[in-house]
Image 1 (cartoon, rainbow, N blue to C red):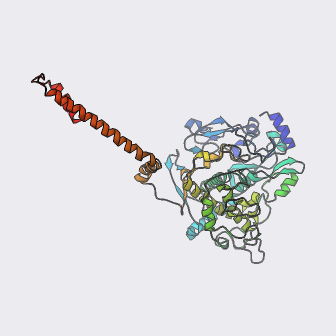
Image 2 (image 1 turned 180 degrees about the horizontal axis):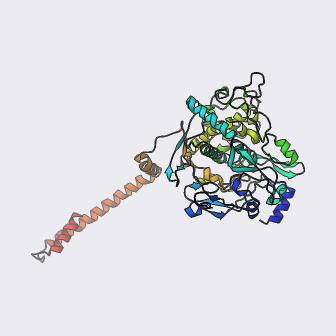
Image 3 (image 1 turned 45 degrees about the vertical axis):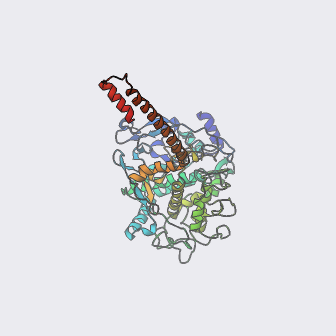
Length: 530
């Protein structure tokens, strides 16, 4: 991609930057389109001297996209992250991270060789000290500047196409709020025009893998911030709930005594300020969120539109959703019928699998029910309930993976909405990861859920049972094969017996020598025994 034509396009269609490692935001990095920071362990780019990774060209998928986005090269998230970088660290073995300095999920140790499995638990099963520690970690993340990442505060054109970069520090919790905003924001088309029918993390196949990676990355950042390598995100099991049971001051914040739209002053989160919640204002200004504080966290659970969302999801809803065998179907967007993803996301009736634009169920129901900051997609991650909610949604995704055991090919390779194909890189992460990489069981990523946890497989389960399952699938062929084999065996035995009788008859004739050579004797005996 040539820089001059690209810059001209971006001057017209005010694009914006993504989530950037602090080590990659100099004008030199942006002009060279290279993000390959050194690893402090050996001082080489991507830890190459230690075999951790190397700086390589990004290979973009050329699979066709769906028809939902009729533009090309008007949004800097297209073909992510090629507008900004065409070379990043590609990590080897069990290493990951923008400089290959971290271990892949599920591994630990100086050389990332120690396998581990962490357990995500129901928040109500945490002890009081464990619950208070979780709340304290959230507060710490909300008030600690990220040492690794920064965000842009203006468009690509406004920073002179990379020659005069303008970035801003951001707190760790707010970084994830900003990323969720950025991946779901509207496309700015110049003037007062925007394109709303675009989302790189929702309303399409990537919804579940994207949020799975998002939560893992958030979990990893908290582990690094606190030094608590065993930290895991708790979940809120909202099945059959009649009210917001975690909306108390002991947990995620109760209601204010005089203002039903804000949190109780006794809550951990009453002083939190939200960011990236004014999407219409950004669109009118053709600008992106710059993480300026915009007011208190809003929440009024239950005071929502009950026509759109009559109730919270039930156990029957979840079970019916899990029974859907197709991960994706039809248009692969919010109009898809009989799609597990679309039904779990909440755009289809969980009891029928039929898309219904007038209703919000399952995942969407919880967002609508909270009736506040969490009810607007782009700013929803401001509310810490977002984390607990999406952890439980991820656990339902995990149940589906275990029940149906889909091959990687089940995830659509082509014709999904923009950014959602199997080999598309997820926005706005650097280094790059594909949607397909996280369409795998949670155990392969180093975590499990307490209510789904199974004992470690024994020898029979791990080695013998898979073969027996395969054998059961071909049993209809084994029975006739055994019968045919029996007939053939009987024929062979009959022929062998006939030959033996002839051999003995020949030995009894008068011209037979009185003495038999040893080799002939042994040979005759062997044939007789056979």
